[in-house]
Length: 219
Length: 219
Image 1 (cartoon, one colour):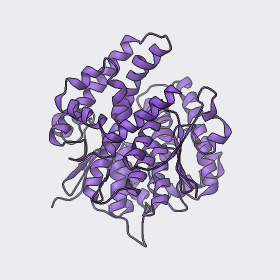
Image 2 (cartoon, helix red, strand yellow):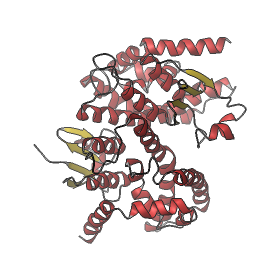
Image 3 (cartoon, chains in turn red, yellow):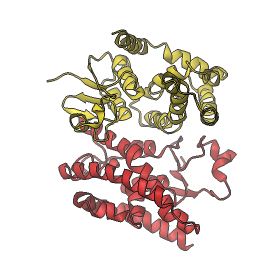
Image 4 (cartoon, helix red, strand yellow):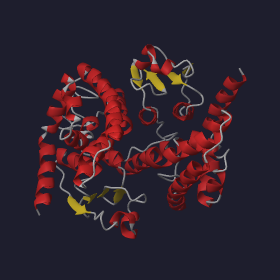
């Protein structure tokens, strides 16, 4: 049987989320880089795996998945180690709360975060100026979301529970990048959010992903 | 213990999706209408259940959830009847495919569908004209998605499997409304998609939801 494969790029947050989940579960995988500049993701062989041309693609045991949150959800259920690392719950009520916060990251946190990352990191790298109006609107949107997070993190240590779950893991790549922008203040000014952010960014599995990123950039 | 409650509106697709899932599983629930015109969803008592002011809210056994797909996911796992109605799979590989198509509905199908519904149904109801440019762009986006659906439905009877799952159920309210617009052609011109659409819209549970809608409109 062929091993696990992740087709993606080390700049794609969705790819990094899947890699973080693999590292949390200590799972070996092969990383297959996709050449976005050459438009590889919009051409035939890739489209046969990911019909919308979206990254990453994950293959394991003959199953191909192309939606990152679905990949992470399934992986965390399949590879949970009872009594050890479990990024999900088996109890229906507790897992319902995790599912809720997974969708919050998808629908509320990531959209303004991606706008800010685009304006404050990606555009400047291309020699373009950020649009102050867009930045200020996205910061206002993100602030409202972070108020909800701060309130939630006052009640629980992590978003969905007192343990780290996939709902927290999904935030890693975008949180990491936001912390390298002026949006950092939005996080640091909220004490529970700030501790949560420092805590999850310090996870050894995330350090492993960053190591892979650095190694690839050095090559 | 208090019974199940759905706080929402009968015009909100997310509310209708949750009701369809309740009806599929033959679960009793109380429907609590939220007065959007009075801004009830943006005020205190509602915001304490749904911090982003989003509909619907679902309460069961002391757990409050406000993300419709998370509600449906948990409900379908909790109330699956082995050997009877199961809108999910217990096999990890098969459930991974369901999870993938749940996220496809969320990220690819619903966004252009909602634009079309807004332009072709909601705006005309308010006496406004649809914007032909927006309509044509949304139809082009939706067409590409429906090409992927047609290809998938050539391989399987339903989106994720040869049985009806939550991935199909999530499409019901928006499909129903699209079929009442000029976007109907996009569905009917694709034979497998067209059969799938007719099949899922004919489910008795969906008929029950429509009945509730009609009854509420008549009052």
